[in-house]
Length: 405
Image 1 (cartoon, rainbow, N blue to C red):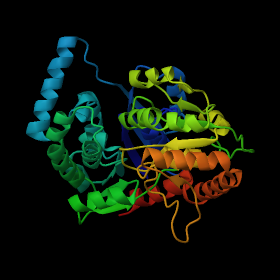
Image 2 (tube, helix red, strand yellow):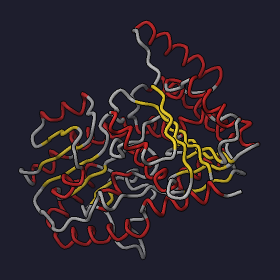
Image 3 (tube, rainbow, N blue to C red):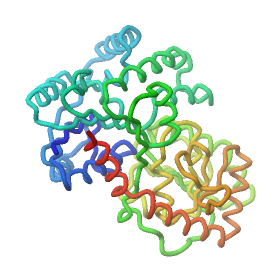
Image 4 (tube, one colour):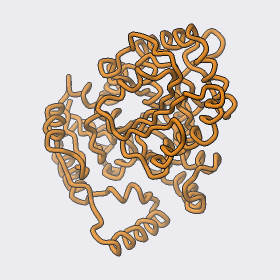
């Protein structure tokens, strides 16, 4: 089968972020049995070596430069135009921001020439390149990493929206947008049951499949020993709004309370592109902000506990699965544990749940004190990832969606 995959985000190396991880591992699996053409955009920091290595993973790599606004006046004008277009036509500014007319022409010509059997939009931002009439001639699939409408609604509800007025304006527009663009696709893929419920509300008659994320078990081996101590870690891209809010919340409202009980407690914030509000957290006792690191798992293996204190951001969290795979006990919020059954009747305990500051303090102190509990969580979580959350499993299910007629 000839598969055309659209990803305006350059999906390599797969350590760049959650979007890249999912896209890369799915295309890697599909490339074993199918001819995959990947159309993507080059970011300014993408190296020639990374391009060569990604090209080796697919049959055909088609690369476009990401559109850039060169001048300040040009950027302001473009922002105004994108906002006006959103209100009038329904496509959000962040989608238009990455839109390439050159890339659109290439996709149109490729499809018109009958060179693919199925086309996939890897992340909803790429839906713009899929024409409504495409599905008359081939199978069209959108791989939604998380609902943009539900995410905006949640950010307003939790009070962490960067621009509340803007997001209140955007919310009904995003609802309209998500309802509209999904109708172009033969099948809709989401990462959690929660997102499936949201999509079914918009499209009750659509084919909607839940395909969770996975973990590369070679890159995230189970740790060989428990380091004990009082070392807490958070992992993730640190220019992401949901991650920024998570570490600021934990640093400002939780960490100091734990340090009153365990003064040597440290908090490592590990991830690329730390925003200014993350960098300033280093001024607090015990906090280290690393930026991008060669190996995330090396830091995980040294940690006593991994926290995932997400208050927004829908979809299953790679950071949670990666910590579980590495054998690190996890304390996480309901958002951080979305898509995972980690506690309850007849469910082995896989992680400790916390949403309020006092709940984080209680759970983390419990793990600091109880090595047997740490071992239990480490063993159970690793076993779950090995059986339910591998990329081979996710890739096989994605292949079934793409090849279904």
